[in-house]
Image (cartoon, rainbow, N blue to C red; front, side, top):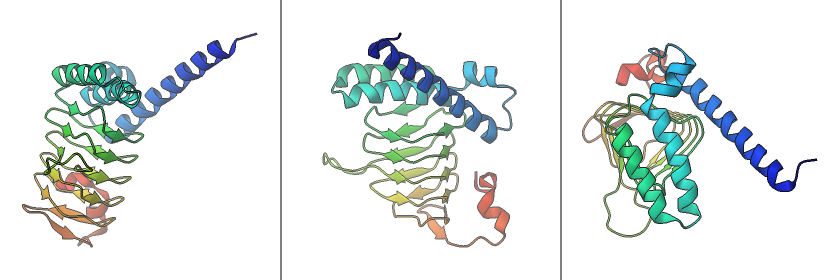
Length: 199
């Protein structure tokens, strides 16, 4: 009969394996260049960055802030993705390519979010308060986009490549340009469903 400690360890390992499988499946769905699951496991910087972030975030929440920051710095060096260990990241988060992505300490990212390389979820205040964006479920953010300050990007919204967003974006809308302008309805329904049009 297993002890409570061994049961807890087995449950934790099984939960981690399930999460990795879920992440790989999400990456496979979103990356047309993905050849197979093993290649994603071994070579995807976006996956490596989020897995490392989860470990750093767990330490951060337990008050082990220095080790969390060291782990985050190591991940940045290896993957090119900088995620502050205090950031809150949801399930099935996928970073395509990864290089140059920066996610600040008070950023909150929902489930099923996809970002491309060069995206910044940054702050514009020196106050120790909520100063980074909230990205709701199902959002896509194009390459090089900057989402700055404590703004909210609504569920299923899209942010176009190189857009600079400094105001809230409603759910299911598209933000494009510098500064970003919001389009609440697409000229063609496929424009709202295919993020590649804006990426």
